[in-house]
Length: 113
Image (cartoon, rainbow, N blue to C red; front, side):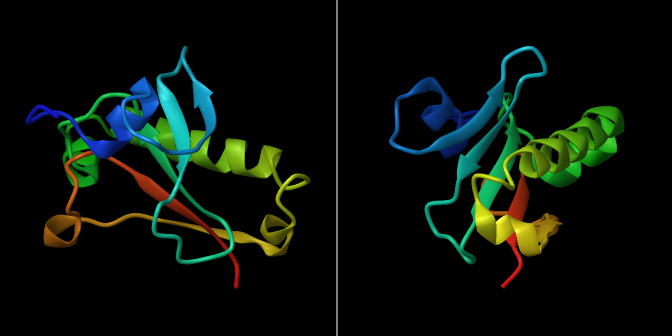
């Protein structure tokens, strides 16, 4: 992987194993299943472009950041019938600062436990 690449970008290209739950090639967003799930459903919503942390995206391109949030909510709601754990509600969270270890903007989607 290059310095501006990420595991998420590699999964989207098919270079690394992973489960893509949803992708929108027009909006350039995807939802990928977490490889280290913290809930019955733990997905990660990402923009296709890598090399920018969540905090960088929020500051530099707030509109794109808000579009990612809308995408995550809409796509998750659309899958409630297929993933019963989501029927009890879900949380969307993101990390900023040093806690964000992969420089790729992302939102975590977790079913309520």
